[in-house]
Length: 246
Image (cartoon, rainbow, N blue to C red; front, top):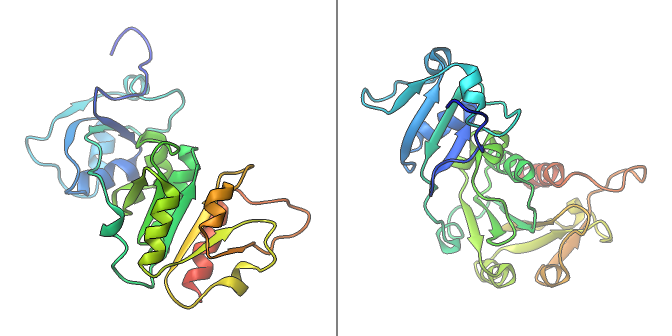
């Protein structure tokens, strides 16, 4: 690890995660295949549970770990290289408990936002998040750190065509409710009693016109006129709470 800072990326085909909650959740996830763990002795001792005796560990000091991650990444003394999660298909998540909402993200590309939304999805028992494959961030350390372990527990479906996927969501009996600041009805007024797919667009441009047309209704959050909008991850959290509190 001598000779300067690393790229913050794992080897070919692997995912590099960091931070205690993200790494601990990945280690506990039986669906994850692990390559190698770098950590301080203190970080290993703080883990919940025991690692297998033959687990590939390299003990390192914090300055060495700094070189394995992107600049100023809060690794908390632990870095893990592992394989990406297996592909999840939409039909795998649409036929479970109908009270669990689906979160649909249209071109939300910031890994911190998607990670925070995964965390809220786990907190409010969403069945999955659905994104477009080409316009969403990859699995990675920043996203997993923001998700605080939820990357390992909330299914993440990546669709080639989001509009077509929304048709499949409707066929499964979900009411597709898009968040839009210009909508007349508030979220509370527009929420149905049955299964809900909440659709959120990227900050700034919002939902694309084609995606809005594939929603059954649009609704807005009743925020003060002094603030134009909320961060998309905050809007997702508020919406998921409203669905849970119906």
